[in-house]
Image 1 (cartoon, rainbow, N blue to C red):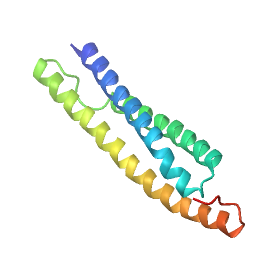
Image 2 (cartoon, rainbow, N blue to C red; image 1 turned 180 degrees about the vertical axis):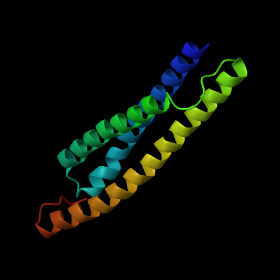
Image 3 (cartoon, rainbow, N blue to C red; image 1 turned 120 degrees about the vertical axis):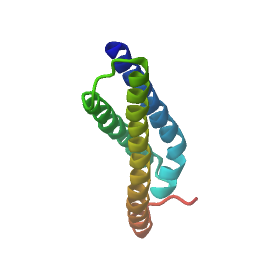
Length: 124
């Protein structure tokens, strides 16, 4: 029971992490290009670095929390275990997304201003 529950936890949370990272990466590139003064190379490079960091932090969090709490010994305990841990992982994913968006928007405005000041921003 315990091994199956742990395997399900890892499969579900890592699957959600991959899906979220791909979704944010593919849809966030437009936002990044705008933030970085239409500089496609800088935006794509930043996007890739964000995805790598996203994976590292989230997979690290997922694996660290695996050992927290009591091991489930019943089906009800396994469902509670999965719902609590998956729910926590999803909340952390959401919090990271909002933190990243705020940081990118702030940094992007600075970079965009610098690019415009130095005549390096492309016209929209």
